[in-house]
Every structure is written in structure tokens, then in C-alpha cells.
Image (cartoon, rainbow, N blue to C red):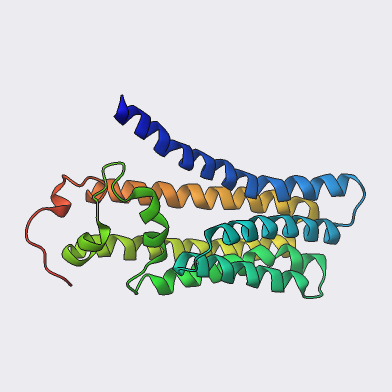
Length: 225
């Protein structure tokens, strides 16, 4: 009974995070099309949607109270997005705002892959460490198992490349498609990119055995790389 309650309790933060992520995607989109239906210009409607998105991120940062690598990553993207939004330009430039932030994120994922703190590792650890078949004490596993370090390098590189491709597609859409269609298509692209990357990562972790602490992935003598 206790295990059931603990398992149920551990699901609630994940569900809340899922709802929050969905809201981050949908609220700015709903605000944009609502304002457009009310006759507001595309430029002002985009600025309003941007403000809502940035406000939500700012609230999250205030709640964290500490600045670690993940928080620094989020702050950098938020400041960058805010700066781009405040640059005087046409509506096409503002539509491409998300592309510049996505490209910056992709570059950061790529660079982090070759450090001791790959971004995918930092984002995954609070969700997976000691859960869903993953081992406990990732610090010890990181030092002991070179294969463990390698999976985070591979997935961080994959995320970086995919986000840079996403950036290129967003810029293409922002400057070639009808203005009112771009926010919805950008949201769809974000969802597709995220789902594909999460699916790839989970399949990769299962195939390698990294997601099963009892697998041969963690067996046998290991030495630091």
C-alpha cells in the first residue's frame, strides 16, 4: 500500500509539469489568435503572447531561488528572447524570435555534450535518478561507467542538432508563410521536435540498457574514460 501511495505521489509532479508545459505552448497561442480575432495587429498580438510566455518563465525562476546550470540555461534563453522581442523590427522578425532562441539552445546542447554537465543529463536527472528502472547515485555511476557518460553525450548532441534544424525550419516559416499561420505551425513544430527527441532518447536508453539498472550496461569492471 505504501509503495502504491509513493508511486502515485511521484506521478503528480510529472503530471503537473506536463500540464505546465502544455500551458506554456497553448496560452501564448490562444492569446495571439484571440487578439487577432479582436482586430489587434499581428505585431502587438505576438508581443502579448511573448510577454505571457516570459512571465511564466520568470515566475518559475523566482520559485527556484538558486542558480544552477539548468537555471542559468533558462535565464539566458529568457533574456535573449526578451532582447530580441524589444528590437524594433517588422512582424516577420518577431515571428522568427523563437527560431533564434531555439538555435541558441541547440548550440548550448552541443557544447554541453563535451563537458561534465551535458544538458540532457541535467534535465533528466531530477526525473529519472532512482526511478523507472534507473540506478541511484548518478554521481557514482558517472565516475564508474564510461558508457553512462557516453549516452548523455550522444543524446545531448542529438538534441543540439535537432534544435538547430528546428531553428532553420522556423526561420523559413517566419519569412515565407502567411503571418497568421506561423504561430500555430511553430507550436506544432515544437511539439513534433520534442516528441521525436524524447522518443529517440527513450528508445536509445532501452536499447543500450541504460534505463535498466540490472542490465549488462552496468555490469563488469569499469574504469573512468
